[in-house]
Image (cartoon, rainbow, N blue to C red; front, side, top):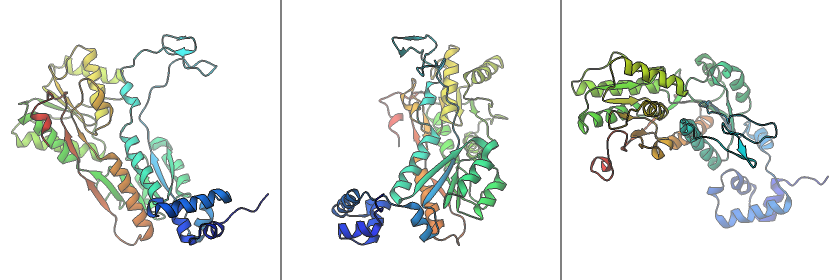
Length: 376
């Protein structure tokens, strides 16, 4: 077997320094196009492949960042045949699957987790870092995340995926950034958005622009994000002199049956409020599906709003009024913080809070074109 080409061989052939060769592979956007083409041509001619492990030995680092994630439940195709073809609820014809439209198809669109992860991936690529992704939920968190830690220089975690004591232990070894958590979260660096302000603005829109007075907050409030959104909802009601419901409407799950049961309970308990203010877009979309199945029209009979700004909210009917998070920017921000902390971990934890924006669509009662939908 021929001897593998080294960075020195590539540098000599391209007529550049070894630092330029390294920069070309690690941060290509920082290298002039002509130089980059010359380096890549030399590398191709020599069959050169950068060695991350060798680079790591020199730097004492792995050259990789970790992301510990979770995934929403996504329905699998029904009736998987042994030959690998997917046969839907109505069977198949000529080898082509025939499936009926599912009410929860919005879950197949990119969700909050996917969009944030995309931002992490893009920023890692630009900065020349590899990305190692793991997941499995809070039950398997300690085992899986510990396995990741030994292979990366820094770690990002989504909320409620790893026990706090485990994260604290990890942070003594490598930098850790907690997504969607508040400042001073266990001494970790954090990236979050203006949850309280965003929810207050969307609630004020319903009160001021649509004249609604009976509003109900929808969603479990066990996370930092949800608590902040609930607080913003309550602040808007108090500022308008309206009654604050004693507790939010909880129990809406991704599962259609669970959400339907909650809606049935609301209808049986005295009817609809004027608006459901949902903690997430997924909760809002599931709620609208359940309402539609029971003959309740949105927004004619009840307004519905969400929070996140996922793609499914834009293409559904009615389209979903929501507060949009800068999800990709959040992913990029955590990488930026990790790189800073890897270079110098002596400073205090970093807390970044990004702005949000109100997106007015049909589910609150706005119609296009119209002055309400053009408000900044």
